[in-house]
Image 1: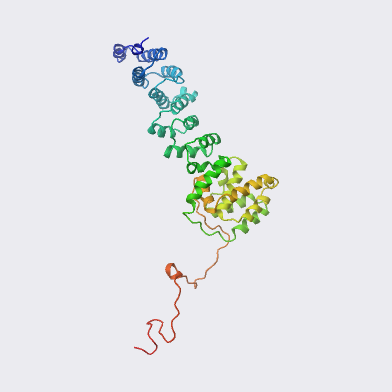
Image 2 (image 1 turned 180 degrees about the vertical axis):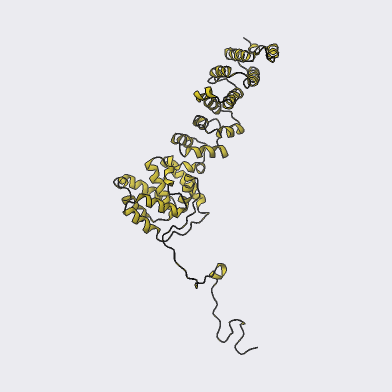
Length: 364
């Protein structure tokens, strides 16, 4: 069958289909779909003709016809991208009780579209905004596209709570370590090192605030008592974080890594951190390998880098404020000098000169 004859001219039937009493639009779509799939050759002209016809009929035919056509086209390798997009849009727009029983159909169609290697930037941005796991996974598995900017940021944000999606993103060869810093807890040691280097490169541009006075002593005392809730709450207050920040990590090991980064960001010394590892949780303390791994995490980055990495992991700013540990009292009679006045050394007046005028005593 010649390619040009694969889709016969049905303009006359299309004219009839516009008559309300003769609804032939579903028949046309079904027939044209079968002819397209049976064609021996599908050159550019055939694909464009079918796409134009199908995209015009899909939004206006009944749900049963859409389901039948979708079943035939969604897994075919030569289904035009425009047709897949039209089917996905139709399914999402007409979510009824019947469609709710088979929620995988629109997701499968959209995921099929996300797997196409020739997606344009606008399509990638729209698909990254879909938010369904099937579509996210198809998009990050698509090595025929480049993931950068806003689409990558959206996918990384959702991957923080999805280990499977995070591992696929981290395995992509086109992502920069700085862009996947929020996935540090899911990364292997090699990728963690790369992320740490990327964060260290900019962390020093913003200096850290002074370590709250008495914070280390307070945390080690709470660790001695094995008061985990009070320990986490005190640490969170020193960083301006909610007291349940460790729940951002699902696995126990990842939660302890998060806690280690928080202690580094808060400004604890290494000996204080090691003491916490050995006293706060006996399950951790009994494993020399686990304690060594936590110490390695603590040593692997500076305080400023830990602050920025923790902020990326939690998607929240780190304010590093002082908890209710020690607040010196200044009476109303205390006076303070601010700004340049505080930094400027005071010149002693020379003997025999008036302090206000600088003139020698007795001069007019």
